[in-house]
Image (cartoon, rainbow, N blue to C red; front, side, top):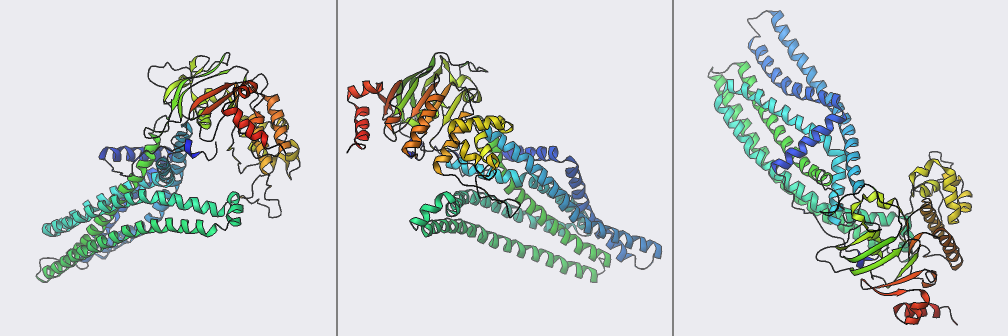
Length: 621
C-alpha cells in the first residue's frame, strides 16, 4: 500500500474563501462561550467582574478628578481629602485589574483549550475512513482547527468581555463628554466609524492570508521534518540532497513571508491613517477646550474632564474597534474548528439500509458484488465491476502489477472507503449497515506500510489491542508467535525499552532508547496483529517485504500456522509466497482477469504464469 499514488489521488474539498456570516459568527461565539463556561465557570465569572470594573474605573477617575479640581477652594479639607482618597483608591484598583485579568484569562485559556482539544480529537477519531486524511485541504483546515482549539476558544471569550467592557467605557465617557459639549461628542464618535470599517477589512485580510499561508507552512514543516528525520537521514546524506530540501523549505518560508508582508504593509498604511485622524480630532478638541476656558465657558475641572473624556472615548473606541476586529479574526479561525466539529460522519450508511448494531460471526464468506470505485468524480476508476468471493476458512491470494487496485480493494474491505457502486457483503449483510468499529473488531491485518511508533516495545505491540497493555504475558505470547520475543527480551529494559531516541530519559546516564532493524520492526508489527487471536478475516499486505530469504520463509511458516482455518487475504508481489493459497486472484486494470489455484493458473498460461515464470527464472543459473 505504500507509495502507490496512482491508487490514492486525494480528493480535494473545502475552500479558502472563508466568509464569516452573522449566523456563523453567532454559532462560533456561542460555542466558545459555552465551552469556556463548562471548562472554568469561576474564572469566567471573575473575568466578567474584571471587565465591568475595568470599564467603570477610568470614568470614575475622570469624574472625581473634575470634582477635586473644581473644589480645591471653597470646600472643607475633609471633603477634599475624601475625594482624593477616592481617586487614589480607583487608581489602585486600576493598577491591580490588568494583573488579575491576565491571571484569570490564562487559567481560562488553559482549561478551555484542554476541553476544546479533547472535543476536536474525539470528533477526529470518529472519522472511520481515510478520505479526509488524504485531502490536503482538509489537512490545512484540521491544522488550523488544532490551533484554534488550543488557543482561540478562551481568547474569543476574553475578547468578547473586552468588547463589552470597551462598550461600557465608551458609554461612560460619551456621557461625560456630552455634559461638556454635545457637538464635540458627535465629532469624536463619528471619527471612530472609519476606524471600525478599516479594522474589519484588515481582519478579513488577515484571515484570508492565514488560509493561503497554511499550505506553504505545511510544506515547510514537511521539509523541516525530512531534514531532521532519522528515517530520511541516510538517503539525504548519501545522495547529498540536504541543500535541495533546505532550498525547498526556504522557498516555502519566503512565500509565506511575502504574504505576511502584504498584510503588514496594509496594516501600516491603514493604522497610520487612523492615528493621524485620531490626533487631529483630539488636538482640535483640546484647542476648543482651551479657548472655551479663556472665555469662561468651561472651568478648570471641565477642561480636565473634557481632556480625559476625549482621550477616554478615543482610547475606549480604539480598544473597542481593535477588540471587534480581533474577535472577528478569532471567529474566522474558530470557524475552522467548528467546521471540523460539524463535518459529520465520513462513512454514513446509505439511505434505505437498515442499521444493525452488531455483525454476526462469519459463517459463509465475504463477497464483493459488482464493486466500482474511484477517489473522486473527476478521478479515473480504480476498480471496475469487481466480483470476488472469499470463502470462510479459505486462503485467497491477490496478485497483480503496481496500480492494479489491490491496495484499494483492501481499503474497501477495511471500510476505509465505501464503494462508489456495488456492495461488499458479510454473509449477505452489507458492511455499510454495521458500525465501523464492529467490522474492524473482526479483522486482523499486517500492512506493508506499518507504523514504527516512538513508544516502548511492549506499547508498540499493544497498539494492536490496547487492552493488552496490562497483560505482559499476552504481549510476550504475541511476540513469540511473531518470532521477536528473544530480540525484545535482550533489550536494556525488555518490553519497557523505548524504541526511539527522540525522547531523552530524565536520568542523563540512562539509555535514551534502542533502535531495531527493519526486519525486527516488521516482526513487531506482525506481533501487533497476532494480539487479535480470533479474527474472522486476516489481511496480509506484503507481510514479508524487505526480509531476507530465511526470515521470509520463517514469517510465512508462522503466518501459515496463524491463518490456519481462518479466512485470509494475502497480497504479495513474491508469487512464491502465495502459491499455496487455496485460490489465487489476478487483478489487472481494476478488473479480475484470472482466478484459480497455482497449478490451474500456470496451465492457463496467462498473466500469473508469465509473472511467476519471470520471478522463477531469476533463481535459475
